[in-house]
Image 1: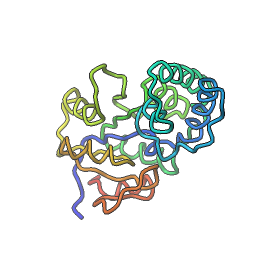
Image 2: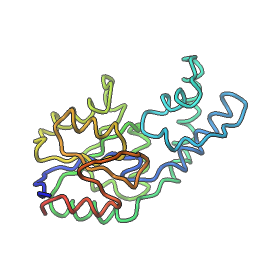
Image 3: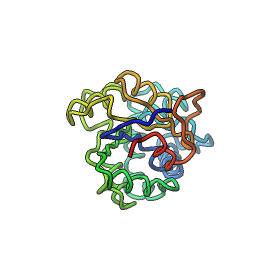
Length: 213
């Protein structure tokens, strides 16, 4: 396969840069109990990707906007004060960032996670200095999808889509790349379960196999 000449790499966060599942599950369970006074017994790992309010609706089909808002408040409080610290970098991820950074390739986080939580984690894991920008679900009020976030990165940063790459672990990431004409690399080590993706990696460092360095 022909190597790609890229100036920028756009990275999904949960399931691509970090394994955030333990902390998200912990905060979800605590917020669920505070909201409903019953324990959540379901793993939400397969639901990770969309914002936390959508995850709740996917789990229990909640229809009350007030209940959802209350749950989100509880979740944010627990996650932003303690549970975010349970996030860990995937093996080889820091080495990947270092190599790309040293080659002058710009790195951007593109995520449905909130910006506050994202920055807390990158600072805690000491990788914040690698990134040229953070584009999160709440960075602007008018984002309606992840495709919108990716489009904004390209426009604001004046990136050439043909010289950019999007790395992610879910179908949502794949669709976002397609809508913006960006080559997509599937992080199969994450939370998704995609099939027959042209560029697929089992470890972060394998991403380098698709880049002309």
